[in-house]
Amino acid sequence: MIQRLTDVAKKLRQQTTEAEKRLWNRLRSKKSGFKFRRQHQIGNYIVDFMCFEKRLVVELDGGQHAVDTEYDTRRESWLRSAGFDVVRFWNTDVFENIEGVLETIMNRLSAPSLGPSRKGREGKKSPSRKRREDSKEIHELI
Image (cartoon, rainbow, N blue to C red; front, side, top):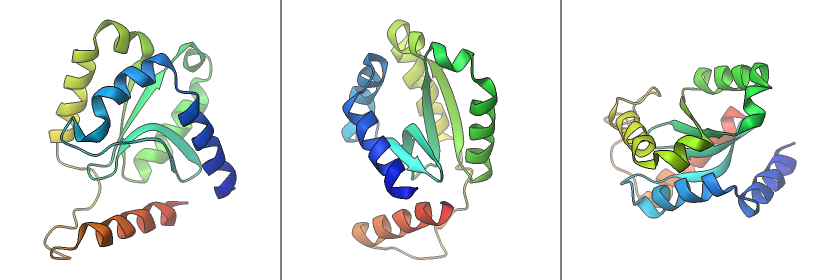
């Protein structure tokens, strides 16, 4: 299952929608001040964008999401139970008001994280060790 979802995530990164391209261009390479991943697996789900440091998931919804609301509700509930904050935008929001979308994302990033804080409990760690621990934490959610 994990490998299948990894393959799906890779394919989704190769077939990015125009709305995802526009938002990713503004979020990537820490232009926002935070590291984001795109089409990333969390548990049995693949999310559009996530900032692991702040445990924020950003989802872009096209017309298909107006139809399958039950799946989205179940998925969002699971993500929240795993300690992630989820914010959703319609693709049209990105095209018509990307600055408003970014402002909302930045407001969520400046809010206290929903997940447990590790500061003060672990002391300072090297970036590579922290990445390994973050990766391990995600895989434990699976």
